[in-house]
Length: 119
Image (cartoon, rainbow, N blue to C red; front, side):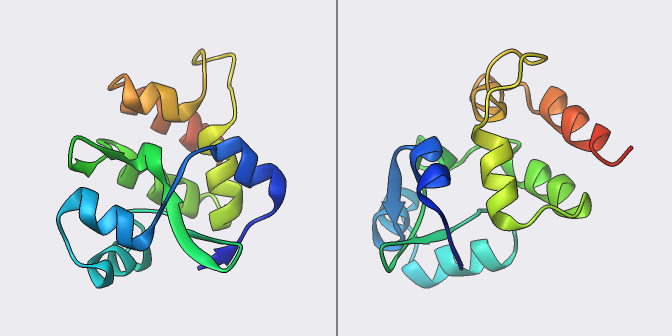
């Protein structure tokens, strides 16, 4: 798990500890760690506490379109921290941030923007 800087921490906003995320998804903390290893979620260590962005969990499930977006960003060579920053940074072409677009079920748009980063 990566250690993030204050700017990225503030950009993401609300975080869940691994234990809180496990409870929200009704799985074990080890399963959350596995989801991070499998790039289905992104995690970070904040003040020594492993955590994931709260926005990644919606209604007891992972946010639709998140895994594909993380995969595309990884394929573009983004580090985990760069991917977190990109997902939570406002993009005028969406409009809003990629996380807001994912929450509005506009994952295809988000992945298109991410794929364009390869060009």
